Length: 345
Image (cartoon, rainbow, N blue to C red; front, side, top):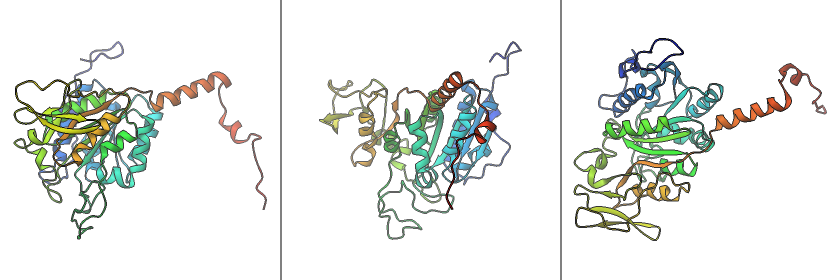
């Protein structure tokens, strides 16, 4: 039970408290259902009053999310959810703000906005649903679609090289960066909880299946029977070991990752260990490129988790410093002051 300000204990929140009365309008079998259900199960565990949560989205299938979560929310304009979220966080730093976006909304028209909210380190949680396709507009090529992907907008095959969302987040110096998948709700819940409790910008890429327009895009890692040989789960302080028999590992040849197979229950000495707290993002970037290389497993988990002062704390500090130095300000005096100029005709 949470304690109020001298009042009776507030009732504990449950998943049901975060389910709205709206009809969920996603295609049957869509991966968005699993993401929604997982988020609704994580929110009550954060110890935050429900009225202090805000879901902010842009445009796309994923961006219907605010309707389905019983919190405050904005269904904003295409790609601009980070802008709305930044303004809201500066006005109300006490709020827990979640940005819900997709590979089209967040990485195409919204790419610039996404980049800057991460480099500023605004305290918010970003969930990017990546299905490698434009779903809402019926199956066009997206920024994460594979090279030579045949879609309604690229019938001869896409000649665009895909964006790697994790690499982009690392380049922007986001302070928490992770990846999970819609078919692994236990892992997804753990990642969402870590992201939400991190102070700063948390960026989570969620592999999400679009059953209508790009079914099976992540089949090798989505299927429980093939996932062990095609996915590697990052564990802080541990070597990168994977496979059904846990006898494959990643080692470094200089700065080039290589796959090695070993005998016995214990991995050999000398394997690199994962350090999600490393200030230098070079190691995390190397991991982010593995899923774009044939023969390597796809990494899931936390790539980077570091601490840096948040944008809103820095801004509030500047404002308080200015008030202490110059005293209270007068907007009318500023507007009618003598700092004017004349534009010649």
